[in-house]
Length: 220
Image (tube, rainbow, N blue to C red; front, side, top):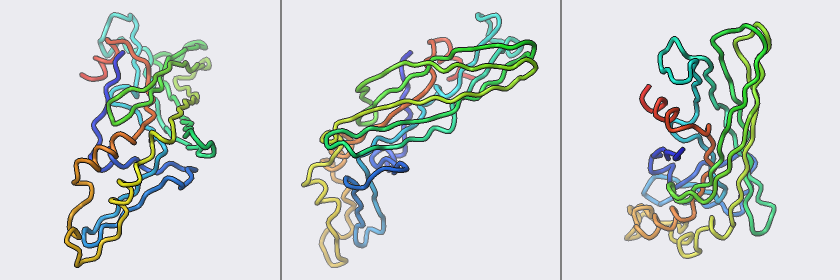
């Protein structure tokens, strides 16, 4: 399965949202004088579920794609990340999530094992690493719904996720209304944008789908 990276709005792609529990040593905030906007960035990797990989549908028979043949539908939800910056050279993120599944028949107990991946992505489109794990789901007899929890982890080098000092100074410099560049957004500078992209990391989590499952999600 190839990972389809969702295209984020530019402000989010360049400025990952702050994660709960993330220390602020590498946080950068810029208020651009008369620009009227505030930019907040942290070195911690953001967490997200890429397009078309947050759901998996199982069919019976497996070769059918008719709605009447849907056997189980599972959804990966409530993804949250916790960033640990206590190590001097590494940023470590732990992501937790739930998997909620619904089956077509409540007859008898049933166990399922579903694979999921965790990928570290840099600059929005470069996969640095990827691992595949599994979650086990148990349906009690007479129950249509079941859920379980899972987790994923990622570590990135602090130096790779930290902006160069010159770029930090350019973004964070306070501008007065009378400054020549008071109305210029520092993010409009190609060098600043490139540096922000290089230092931006994400931990992406989703179901490890077959090509057929991925195509089904993309077209339903």
